[in-house]
Image (cartoon, rainbow, N blue to C red):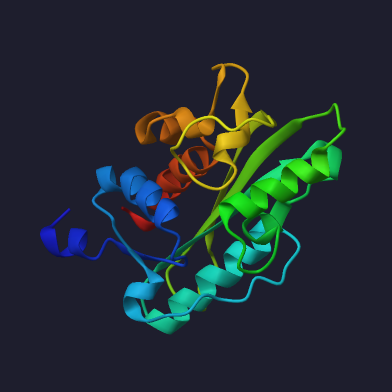
Length: 205
């Protein structure tokens, strides 16, 4: 692969979440892929009106690709609790309101689960890559990470619901894991490794 081809390995992330940007940059760095957030190009986020992760990820990737002219990468992910029929689901980032903080979302989640003995939950992630806004063959991959919700937060790493997401096999929450370890086992890490394989296979990256 020549240097010019490698220089074209760039993806615009259809998000301005610094936690997601850091995780995705780390996951794609071994492939020589440059990842930039859409805000760096002055692009505002797309609407996310859909009820499924895959539909929202497609909408975000398509919007970013059309607005920038870059290949775009989008992920839609969230926490699904069995006792809440899959909630907060696609509304995980705004569970307590459109501009809710992580602390507010976590507080609402614990309130909704109060009195429930079923604390099973999982993170789900769908990632989409598109060459352009009209790409008829988007690359799509997903990943799932099983755990439980605990009332008492542990750890200061990660973001979102990580301090309350307990991993039984490890005996700790997601927020106690360092970035490298989290990327190896998380829903986003699983999805991104699957997408990386598709990028190599379909796009020749």
